[in-house]
Amino acid sequence: MIDYHIHTRHSIDARGTIDEYCEQALKLKLEEICITNHCELDPERNDSLIRFDDQPRVLTRNGLLRLQDEIFRARDAYKKKGLSVKFGLEVGYYKGIESRLEILIKDIEFDFILGGIHCLDHICIDSSREHPEYFDFHSAERLLENYYVALEDLVQSSSFNSVAHFDVYKKYGLGFYGEKIRNFPESMVRNVIKLMKEKGVALEINTAGMRKIDEFYPAPDILRIARDEGLEMITLGSDAHRPEELGCDIKKAIAYIKSFGFEKIYRFEQKNPISVKI
Image (cartoon, rainbow, N blue to C red; front, side):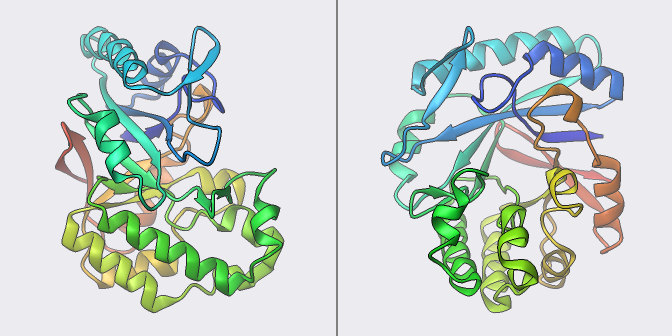
């Protein structure tokens, strides 16, 4: 089993050291983990942060190099114990991030870059505190339209290996809008999936939804479209923000994708996809 979406205490909303995650991975008999701490770069927000020595600091290239050193030390130490540790990043996408992101991560030895939509109009719709600031002024239909326009831009940017939590708007949208939030614009979703296939971008099955709303991201209807459109590349991630969440529902996620006919998941090395038969 593998888990390709993990936040250590370097992410300001998470806790747990790299070693604590690695030790937990050994207990769970995971074969490979990829640490994907947050990278938020929106200049209109104040959350471009990384934590070292229990202190939040502005996220810089030097900070990522320091993080790389810490992860590579763990990679070398835990390889002897049978655990593969990969270096990733979860980037909150906004239109225009591409050049800033390219400069920040140039020549840093990432294995995997996740891209996700966390904010619309610079408001975090994935936040318990902020989401009403956006939801109060947008219908469910408009939210969905704006979200999938942003998601298409994310995929079009060719900056990412996989799309994180594809329909994360459900997290707070179900409580706010009710079942209307499930009525996604199929033509827009289909276009995004087609573009992902064309660009070689994977679809993440994110198990955090099981802990929040008792269903995976993405929903079955979206996964069915992905299968219909011939998208093959799937990654698995718990979106763990503490060691005890590592690997949560990964076995269920494998059963979930198998039920739709998917036969492989993907791991990454130096941003190159490697298929693993399930």
